[in-house]
Image 1: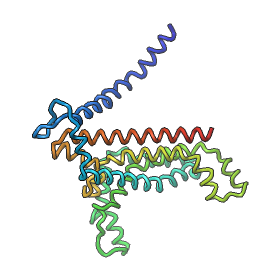
Image 2: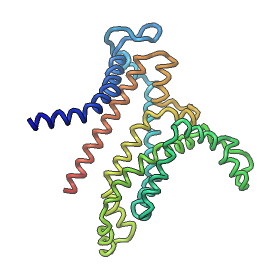
Image 3: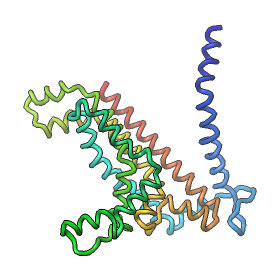
Image 4: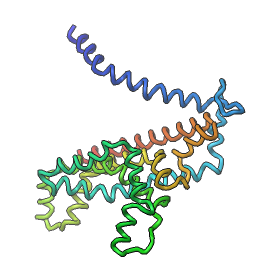
Length: 285
């Protein structure tokens, strides 16, 4: 009787989350998959039937650079976020002491503002008459405004700003529990600060680094607003392609096929992350 009651309590607690997952994740995903295998009529709509023509069309040469460009942007965004986020997480974990919670809060508070508003503010800052150009001209460093918007650098700035918390938080979570006595022992054995970091601190923080890579690389592959707003939409990536196929070209099956390929690729990366994480845990035990 108690076992049955325990099962009902567990089901009642998990029921709302399970229902939301089915309604907001599983059903939309199945609809997209169904659309991706549907034939297309002359106007781009979906008709009943089964066809793999959309997936075959993805192998055309015109789509390969789009996928490669998306991977390149995601890769560089991940590298930039790690180069900036790791030192921040390290400082908060080891140097900030009692101010760590405050610094984490200051890192997260700007992200309470709507995403589009935050990206629009960067358009103002990076504009020809924006604050950055005015500051540089005021300091006498430049004579005329620089072209900052519509560049690859502007896209990287937007990516860094958007995904920095997703980088700092998992790395901080991995660094914070590290026993400080391990670093003291390494120093006592003659290791310098750099050797102590690479042989002690960094290996112990690898799960957090891997989580940060996952949290940045996967969403960066399909990001849409940042390359369009800050990069001018000059380079078509997967996010742009999906929007164009659905809204402009009215090719719903092909747009759904691109979405499915992106989801499958994200799933494979997640599985790779889980396998690598398990190997790290096994090596430690």
